[in-house]
Image (tube, rainbow, N blue to C red):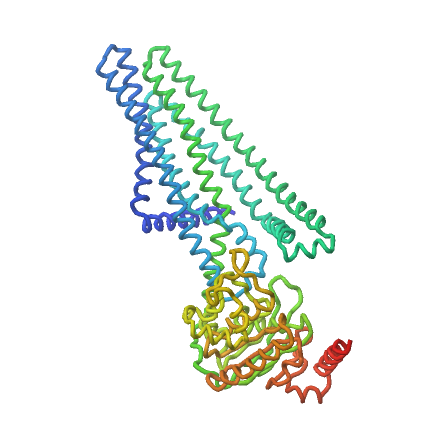
Length: 607
């Protein structure tokens, strides 16, 4: 325990120094201006007290020159203090917003998006911290300036106590009394920060339940099932648990704050009584009383300001701890980045060697001991019932996850040794849970190959490959049509959104891996047939060009009969592999599933 706190303080200080340097580099004039304001406010405090003492002593001593100079100086200092206070607020807000929202938040988003894998989206510890940081990155800069302001306030407190000591050295004892509220408040704030992190999961749960009850897609089912009240009750229960834990922490923090202020008040009262006694016994002046009262009152305000700024800086621990944790996670993940070059073309293909995988937090493996070879230039179909591990196999191929055991080799190179971003530049994919990007039609297709996002000719070719010509012709503004009703655009049907995803997957002309994960699940039979015919032809073109492996995941067995190899998964295990006619002749799992599906289609067509 003795080492954890110093380490935490050092990390906080390093982060604040980093943010201050960032602020200086981006906005040097405003940053230096705000630091000058803080320094000026320290001078104003001392000058005000000294000027008032000079004015009062001048009046008592019948010295009009001293009295006027003191009064004029006090007025000028008061005006300067008011100006500095207003300037402080303006610069402070602008710097927090600009540095926090425009730069720190952008960097945080870039770090998260730049992670090579997707395991962080399945880990509660990562999601808890992302929830805490969502929309709160400005608090990091807010806390940094709180720490800077606290340092200047400590200097101001030291100046004030020094002035008090000129009237009586015993008044220096007010300094530890002034520090008591700071220590107590920090102790209480630590409990609040801990409660924020502990309740992040329940906080995320109640937000999720709220979205379920208010989004059109899920609210329809809730109304049919009559489950709306149940969802509301669960949301309330989750929120009540968050409120209970956080309220208890805040009550504890309030108790610590009360104890600190009680100590300060006792010291302040004793010190003031001592100065008054000196004046009444002739060992001090009336000016000393005025200085002592002025400084004592200013000391109280200074303690409050210091307490506020320390509270701002320590309260930012609510986001600093998650931020630093995520930075460490990002750094550790990036340190595992592969360094081997991605081949220009496949010569042998992709090999799975005893691959196993378990999702983070799961207690059962999704894939177990999978071994197979995907020959360069081949079309490989993956079939199996829902939950058999088909999509997980695809995710491993795309480097969204790394195998928990075994290896995946691209030709002779371990896939883990290839940089994820470089491998994905040579990968095209259409997933069953495809994205619905609410932008223009041209952009949502062009995103499939970012360097050519504005290449209208290539976009047109991708649209034709996905059999989306008719869809494009129906859009009011063609390629420039805004999609999605959230932004006043055209809302597409599920099948139309899927066709845009298919077109997006066709943007890259020379991938090494082409993945179609349930690519026609939302399409009718004629569209499905037309698309598979086109994509099989495209697969052969890619095979001749780069030796690309095309992987097709489908629950419709009729669409995979022409594949060069069919992999049959069952409960995460590869139970069969071969061509369609071979698997039918061999019997077993594939033949059973094929016949069951064929009988179901025959039965439905005769009704």
